Length: 458
Ligand code: PMP
Image (cartoon, rainbow, N blue to C red; front, side):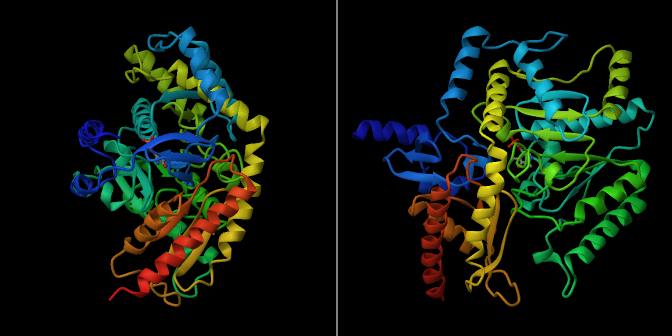
């Protein structure tokens, strides 16, 4: 790049306020400019190749250069680049996609509401539940239960549902209607000697105690990712969900399954609800819905939620909720094609097979002195690093060692994400067996670098 182009690029990049970035540090470091993508690889502006082992943001199921998705977008752009679905208008892509999602849903669902992001999907379902409970004459039934380490988004309500300190700190959140219970991570939070199942019993008791304390008639819903993603790839104990669902049913509290990461094959079944035997009243979908080629999310609701909402909207005269791009035709057309490809190429079955392979290979690091736990289900895994294997003690500055490993991984051409000191793996569903081996090899190089660096620390 010549001097002038460099200066221009510097000016351009410094005009962005980046999500999940230390804004001051960024003024010093600058960005990693990603220029193009192909298959499971992305290339930076210098031409360096990286395996995108996080599928971007857990989302690019079909990789970065799927011609059929590009064509679906182009065809729809030529035919009808935009039209809304307010005031009873409709277009084929959004109605067909809604039908397709209802057909795929693991439990009977009745209607689909489209948004642009997972955060808006979470906000939308909260508004719909509040609207419903007002319609049912239960105006006090509004509280929401979520979990520590949950990720549901960043808008005011979805950030409140999120159970991560950095999404609350400095933002005056969470909102008072949101209550957080423990997350199901036996390795980290199980008591000494407690089995996974005893631990799951304890979490169900904790949930029930909270419900009894607050009063079931004040609680609208429980929110949960079937397998928690951004909080560290936390795989629940085998009977966790059946125990939690029994408590919710007993106290007439609805269950919202946030499938934004799990949906469309990630855990080795079409939905995380299939993998973990979850029977939700509402489901939230995004990310792998369109492989993130277009921004789109969907809220699926069952009849129990829809019917009172229909009555309420009739009484008021309209459902006063909707976004300009709700059901956007290009995003919907891309999603339809994306789902078609996932089905035609049996990428769900492939995720199960590749996931087993990835987890087996990562299991090979279990004896490494810095590795505390290797966990995963389907094609989503994490390796948690610890200061002391025997006591599971964390590092003195949490996140520093994981962050170092992620940097070394990037150096070796492998993009991962460190969540605290857990290293996440979430490669595209189109990854090959040979590419899984390359990911594991590059992880090993980064781990060797990290071990050396850690040993040299004072
Ligand atoms: N729910 C889950 C489970 C997520 O993982 C995410 C994003 N990582 C969201 C909601 C929020 O989605 P978005 O970033 O599209 O708002």
